Every structure is written in C-alpha cells, then in structure tokens.
Length: 161
Length: 240
Image (cartoon, rainbow over all chains, first blue to last red; front, side, top):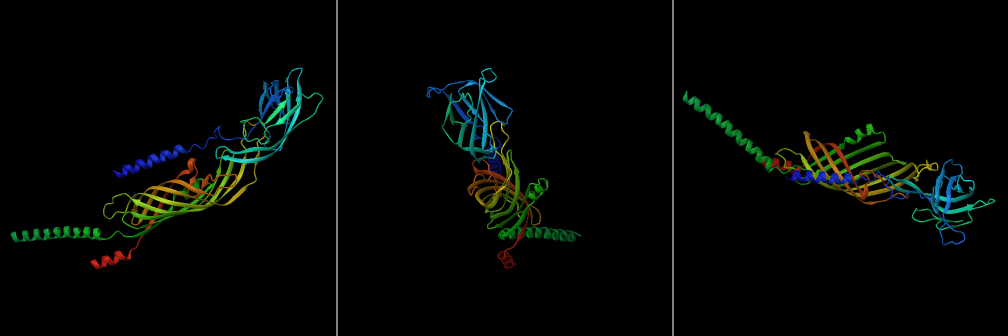
C-alpha cells in the first residue's frame, strides 16, 4: 500500500516540476531593449499634442523607411551596436511638400541580463539629441523627459513643431 | 522385512524432521543476527554515457551510503560537471564540483536474506563553480539595426549555491553485493552567490535552475556493498 502512495507522490511531484519549466519562452511582459518614445507637441501651445502629417522616419545608413502615417506618437529603435543613431524625420513623406529634418541621438549603452529565454537587452543612458539645422526645419525644438531608456511605458522625448 | 521397512521410514523421517529443524534453526539464526552494518560505494553510469553523445557535457558522480539501522542510511554524492549551453541569444559554460549529504530511509519489506530498497531521502547539497559567458546578442524589438553582438567571453569565478533535495529511488541487488540503483531528486535552492549581470541558470549537482528556484535531476548508479561489522561477527561466534 505504501509503495503505491510513494509512486503517487513521485508521479505527482514530477508532473508539477515539468509544468514549472516555462522559462523557455521570452514573454512580452519581460523587459526588452526599449525603443525611443517620442510625442509631438504644438510649438505655439506646448500643452497641446499635435499630429505630424504623413510622418516617416529613416535611419541614416538604413534603406528601410518606418512609415507612421499622421500621428503625434511614435516609437523608433536606436542602434544598439553603436553609441550614435542618426535619423531623417520626414513630414508629408512622398508628397510635393515633403520636408526632412536630420536628428542625431548620442547615448551610452549598458547590456543588462534579463532571463534564460530573453537573454540580454540594451539600456540606453545619457540620451542627447541634436537637430541638424537646415534651411527650413519643421522641428523647432525638443524636450528630454527621460535620459535613460529603460522601458516603453512613458515618452522619453517631446518634439515641438 | 517389516522391520526393515519401519527402519527405512524412520530414517527418512529422521532426516526430514532433522532437515526441518535445521531450517528452523537457520531462520532463527538470521532473525537473531542484527542487520549487518555496511558501506556501499558506487559510481553514476548515466553521466559518462550521456557525455559520449553530448560533446558539451562532461560529468561524473560518486555515491556512498552507510547503513545505520535496519532501514536508515547516511547517504551522499560527490560529483564534477563541465557543461556548455547554447541558448537562443547567448551561450555559456558552467564548471564546478558538488557534494550532497543526508539520509535515506527504506520503505520496502525485504524477504529474509534480500537487501533491496525502495527509499526516500533528504539531502543538503552544496556546489562551488564558475560560469563563463561565451557570447551574446542583445534582444531588440524588431531588427531595424544590425544586432549588437558581444563575443568577448566573461568569466565569473568563485560562485556557490546550496540547496535541499528530496530523493526517491530504488536499489536492487543484482549479483552478490552489487547493487543497481536509480533515483529521482527534486531540488529546492536555498542560497546562491550570483554573478554580476548574469544568472546561475545551471548549477552543478542541482541541474537547470527553473522558476521558483526548483529543479529535478536523476542518477543511475552501480555500487558495491562492503559488509563489515565486528560486533555481528563476534556475536555469531558466541552463539556457536
């Protein structure tokens, strides 16, 4: 009788242990390398969010264009392999009134261990943007909210236009 | 003729009765004899076999137990492990030694003269080891930029961990004093020294560190029983 009891314990406990092994999948809830969250505001009234018409962003040295449409909120990936990411911000992308402004982001990087399934992520620190001046900048100014990109819960940068 | 028959029958009866008596005496002797204290030493045979098929795995384990009372044993394991892992975005190697010490309790009622075991036990385990992070790529959302890969190995030395283990196993005497044993161990981590900016994902003797600091491991051993007990032998001599 007690052998059946023992067998029962062994089987039930081992089943329990096998069910516990769920750390092979990197869950969405686990921290990843954060993208840069930018909100756009009205340069005339800095309490108002203001959408950018047909906004597109392209990394310099990257052929892919990130099309965002008309929006006042975007998330763009920074280059985790270098300490500098350069972007072109297009307003009215692919239209006759297209206007592109170059914005450079410099930062320092720390690689942080997350878990077996998610591996390492990059935390960007000391974020410092700079807007390259051209003949007609549509980006007028900016405001840094967080210099450390730790998560995507909140905006890191506000751009006034 | 009649006398010869009676004589033959009585001789037969004598031998039969005598035989039964002798058997009874043997049974009484073995019942009287205190259970022999014994030391059993062995080696895990599953780990070298797995090592033949997995090049990234080198492990050995030695086991021993000492019978204290009828069903109670002091038991322990000692082992070394060198094992490499390739996860999705990083790879590492764990190297170290471990020991486990505790008790086994036999719950199996043996027939006279048999020494098989179905047992459960408890262990305290401790390991000292190093982790070497071989390379990694940082995890990003999407792949707009080329991934950031670091190929410079980082070694984390002087790490340690301790844990408690619940053991369930069987031991079967196959030949005289040669035992084959298999056991399942359920481990619960109690303390560990973790590397900076990395984790102990694998601990020698503890196995993969799962969620809630739990793990399961097994061993399959062959061991030799060294019977020794002065007291028992002296007692047998006195009985004679």
